[in-house]
Image 1: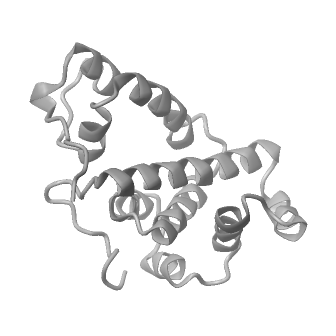
Image 2: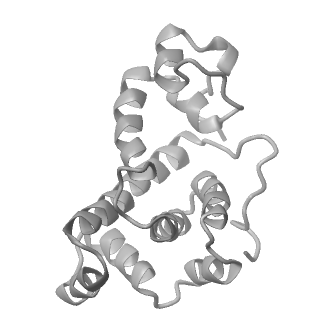
Length: 176
């Protein structure tokens, strides 16, 4: 159930267009239609999210996507899951790795996401393991990615943002 109406692209005002689609027409997106309800908030969030998903993030793309998928799975966020299964596959994440995210297998990324979600911090042992493969900047990008996608899952779930038209569920409700 959508609790907040999605603003169709054709109805975006000048402010929404300047924030969500500066100078370009975009394919239908329920996430952007949702954010079009509040352009100032969208601008602030998308600036931050642009770092997390863009070239300025120091986190390896595969690791980022595995972390986001684990957040989406734990938070039962179908929209986030479906979108990021597609992105993860483009980044070379395998179906076996996606299945391991769903199953909660004891991988370092799954464990770290689970601990951040449950305790809002990492125990020394997990932090040390991550610090063996990530530098300080990557550690920050990892933690901020988990937090940001947790927030986004809460928003999508609370306001009932459903899957985009034609978007497969990405295996959210069926085996990966």
